[in-house]
Amino acid sequence: MKFIIPGFVILMILISGLGASSLSIQETMTGSHFTLSFSRPMITSTDNTLEIEIPEANAITNTPNEPMVPLYQKTLYYPADTIIQDVTIIPSQKILQIDLTRSLPIAPTVSPPGIHLKPTDDADTKKISETHLFPEKWYDYSISRGLYKNTPSVILTIICYPVRVLENTIYYSNDFTINIQTNDQQTPQQQTIEETLLIIAPVEFEEKLQPFVTHKESKGITTILATLEDIYDGSHFPVEGRDEAEKVKYFIKNAYDTWNIKYVLLVGGRKAGITESWYVPVRYVHVFWEDETQFMSDLYFADLYNADNSFSTWDNDANDVFSEWPEVGFFKDDIDLYPEVLLGRWPVRNMWELDIIIKKTIEYENMQTEKKIVLVGGDNFEEPGIEGEIVCDKSLEYLTDFTVAKVYASEMDITPENMKAALGDGAMFMHMHGHGSPVKWGTHTPDGFDEWMDGLYITDVPWFFNDQYPILILGGCHTAMFNVSIFNRPWIYGYRLTPEGLGWMFARKVGGGGIATFGYTCFPVASPGEYGDLNGDGINEPDCVESGYGFIQLQLLKGYGVEQYQYLGECWNYAISTYLDTYKIPYERWHLHTTEGFALLGDPSLKIGGYI
Image (cartoon, rainbow, N blue to C red; front, side, top):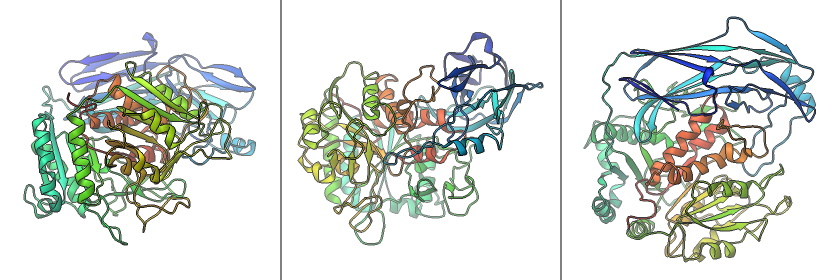
């Protein structure tokens, strides 16, 4: 449902299923006034546990080791030059309570793919539910700036918790009053984003990239090639930034402001040598989770602005530790996360790799790729359901006119030979959902968690000789990690051969393989089991498609098949933004991993399926 506020704001309620009487809106030229009304909580008993139902709520909390209670979430979009000056959310003056006969269900702990979940024991449940009110507050909200349907926007997400729990008592609010105060601009001037690609590369790649620039121009994509030397010398804009990565980010911001760029392609990966150095710099972020203390995030380069139009540093306290959440303590950098530009990287390590990916991309866009998807999955976790197959099957709901080839653990062995047979001459997409490392992807047979199936290892990649190059969605930990080398082998788990990461090796494979890879530079979060409608779309499905790495991967295909986005970076932005709309607040370590580490190893201006 859309609400149009004359002259200055578009409002969209993301989650459907609300009763018509539950929401009333009043608009003024300087803000909005909302009243939310909720029914009395209904307590039902299921399988010796209690559940709370409120018809007007549209989602459920899933904070590990805390009670699962209903919530109401809403996202609003404003023109990019809107300043939200104040948000006031007030629950009922009279808070009511209901005493329960026993405890509410507790949300499970969370883990990345590769580590099985550990259920909460009774002692933990009792301790948690008796020590504090949950949720901590009646409401939460986040103000960000990014792209909505390729239009620069200010994004306001509001969450109201009509129920809070302490021990075996629930406290509830029948209504909430929300006031949003904005600036009084009558005729906002929207920034026009052009079909312009900015390529950033070292000067030694400049000549080799010229045919690619010419090709892009021939397809109507205005293309600007800027070398790092030009950036650091201030040839285009005054130099800003404390280190090389921040100088590159400031340059992208200035290009966005001045040239109205839409796409950014970073061309350069790790240089050869024992000591880590880069052709194009990277940014390490520091969100501790599951023993991972830091990881690379290219999203850093795409998130240019905060909601107040200030530069998004990802380092609020200016201590040179970016997106900082230590093992003990709180999240120290309140960051925006939403992209302003559509960004990908070719992490090439030499001229040979650069030549391969340029030729493959030109070839890809000059031909037509068959509307076919290859799906590969198995049983990833001990919870009920074959998660890899469930996620892969969900892909088909968004690609209704595609042919499909399945390599499922319930039907056959997951081997490189069966993957190659399913791929045949090629496909438009290849979606693999399982476990990963920088050099290997794998899964299990149904209920066979003591053994791994063969999966896909970097030594298998040279034997893919398909003619059409799929876009690979490689679901699993560290599948797009591009800082590995024979001298740097994190999260390898004993594998000896580590020349480079699996995701990039498949994309740059000569004479076959893929054209781009979506994956992770870190541990994303997994969501096995079934604990309610986590994403609040009104359809209760297995959690592996409603949250975590399964959810964000599926948004790529929804962006293409349902939202009709035609370019790779548009689908990446849709996936990131949809995940943030749903899971940005409250901040959780695992959701930050899943978004900050979700990488596109490919050209963001790639026309999906080619121009023919």
